[in-house]
Image (cartoon, rainbow, N blue to C red; front, side, top):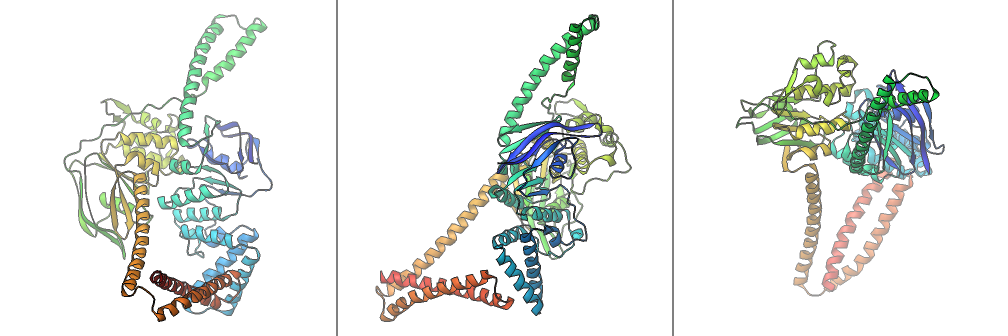
Length: 636
């Protein structure tokens, strides 16, 4: 069943062609990624599909009986709107009912904290529960709860304008995912999220019964969620029916074929050019037709053909024997401990990644190393030959609005490569996607992503021998990421990277500092996938050990009882017979309480009373079942 059809779509900004005459479609259940270099029209295409922009030509047809949800790169929330109103702004009955229920729940929690639950609030809560029940929306409410809790959205009355960039992103994501939608369109959904959040979203989207089109530069996320890739390149659209490795293979084949065809066209063009220069012009219809054919051939030869990028590796400053020593480092911010007695000695040429939830101290750790913050205790000692290159999330400050090339030449006009040759600053910029003509663009005219990339390139060009990179992959397209990975892979100095890009980390790092919170940092040798596999294995072992311990405790208790007597006493036999009836009665009461809580009836006080009794009954059932098991073992 076709959900989306894009027919002969074209879009140009000024003289820049984004895409021309592209056609594709999405079938029900299809999960596709859209990739391209920055500035080539990915977000524009999504905006056109979502109806926010108009194409120059062509049309977009969305199946009439389906719902569509769209997550743009930048949200359009008004600053004064509450988080709750931003998330639940849809007018569908289910959304509005859950919105009212969530308001009542938040107000009830506040009132219970002060011990002042009004009769009006109880009645409002009762009506909200009745409406949820009437619309059979409890499953939907469970979905809302899961998303809000996973995104850490607790204060739903907070104005959106007071949120950080990451919190706004989570609010926009929650709004998009909560909607009961058929076609989901996401533009860079993983930006500003930590790895744990990204992994949850991977699992959510993988199991969701939804049709998906998303723009992402996160190759691991793309590979886990999508099995279909569209690519915009030189204004054309290419379709690859497979995952990221299949895309890489088939794209390489396509480029090879195109380059071979281009070489043949070029030879033919040179022959035709010679004929045009030497033959009498336009004397016959035959020669006129040949000249027209030559003009068409000239246009084909003039088109851009992608050639594999030539990699190069820079020469770094010499590293001495002493690199960087961290001794018994402590750092606290108020009552929050971010680092507790951390020590490490860096070795020559090592590449280390840093992972952990947002707020666990990753960026703080980097600022301590470069001296922007002072430790609470402990010390950091850098070797005399160390020259740090620090790329921070805050970006760089540029004085005056100047051209890119002029800014870069302040830091380095040439870069010495590993082979002993030199390349110019302009060539270095071109390699990482700032084309020669773009290098004369003024700094203020760059996008946020382009400014971040320029900052990173200036950091690399200053020839540091110890690179400290804080989220260097944000806002970069996949082509730039591949070139950056290649550059860092052959880099001879030390590298310390904070990144949520698991593909990037897997290709580069030797070991990982895991920030677990409360100041604890674990050093794990291996890449991120190695760490995740080991962590998952530890969790499985812990659960298995807990289960075995419980079984051992039961067995030990039963064995002690058996040793005292090989058969039940008269009193124990009476207890054993009554336990069966008690367990049956408690199970019936537990079922009845569950039905009451799910019915939507009852006051707030009754709901609390039922919930407390439900916990009591569950505990009693566990105890009596354990005792029944002990007596049954003895009976046997």
